Length: 398
Image 1 (cartoon, rainbow, N blue to C red):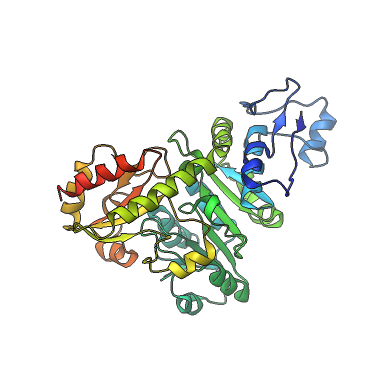
Image 2 (cartoon, rainbow, N blue to C red):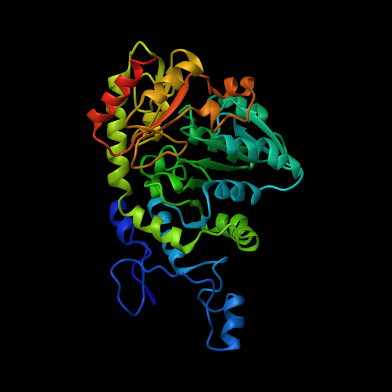
């Protein structure tokens, strides 16, 4: 087996998403091969020893690495502009591993308070069980980040845009704060996708994704990925993943690898549709507030213009009438389906206060901006007019 392509930086990102990292067997297959194997065999005991000592290149065991998984890692790293990537079984495995690889008992983490429910659990509840103190701040307030930093602060963590409020944080400014105090900045970039925002270029040390979302984008499998410099991955991530085993399935890696070929086509179309829907619904009497990155009325519009190349496939809507109004709206939809997933080819909608953020107290949800009337709308690949008509008909029932 030989590597089909190397990091050819003069090629456009769309081209690298089709070719980067491809490994071909002696059969010369067109589509990337699925290496559905747990382990590998060696020609001799000496070769096996050299492989395990890192003196001879090659694969060892699927918990450590796999040819199909490696192709996915190299391809997404090339697209992200990262030196290295490691794939995980889920997006939350990627978040957890990235943070735990950087922290130990006695350390401190500062995170934006507007987070996906599971991310906030890891920061505020799981890490403190292992002696890591945590502080949650208003991510849009740079002074709050500075004031929360302690001598033992090792990590700053944020989502931008945030789930589900689409709050946007100045990544470059927070990265500067992290550098000043000797901390690492980890950014969850799911809501933007790697197409519209490059946190590493803005100064972040690490980017994490739930590949389940836009990267698969068709509701088929779970996956996650951690990206950064080669030094970052080797020092903080590689050994942790190898020894603890949140490994990506080779089959899932193959599915995600094929999905990367169409990611720009899908996300560009979904983003364009989302922007059109946001324009069509703005000012509707049954919507108390509409939040969409890219619109001039977004609270962080100036930051978005600086750090994002496009908007998002997601829209946040505050429906009049609180939970009851939101439920009437969701139940009246015919084309758009109720689901807690996002970034799918099918348009999906959810009520965060009773799903992704239901475990928090009403006061905590209010602090995060997750109000009773808030719904999160993920735009798919359906025709724009059909989606607008479905939404307008449902709003009539509120």
